[in-house]
Length: 102
Image 1 (cartoon, helix red, strand yellow):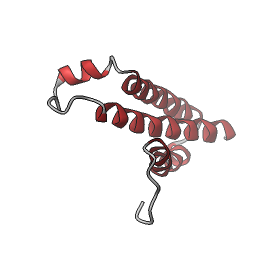
Image 2 (cartoon, rainbow, N blue to C red):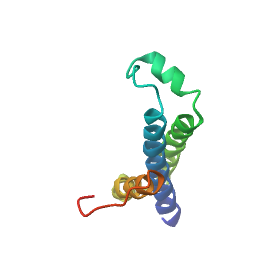
Image 3 (tube, one colour):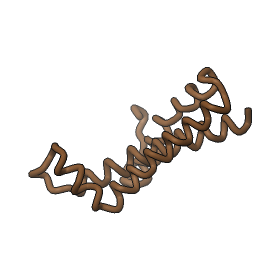
């Protein structure tokens, strides 16, 4: 049970880092290219975006492992913590304070 909780928290944190790092990488992309397969291929060469992609894979693997050791009823509510974790990480990385609305 403790292992399931730890794995789910790690999965939520990895997913949060994934969102923030991929957004940071996308913000550094040239504005003239906003979509398409070419943008994804170009982003894979940026360390920040690739780090976000690696966190996404790690989060998926951690979530799968958590679900194999515990039930959905235990894992899913913990994974919902991804949103507040994402907000905290983004506020630190982008140097923007969290307001009351967040």
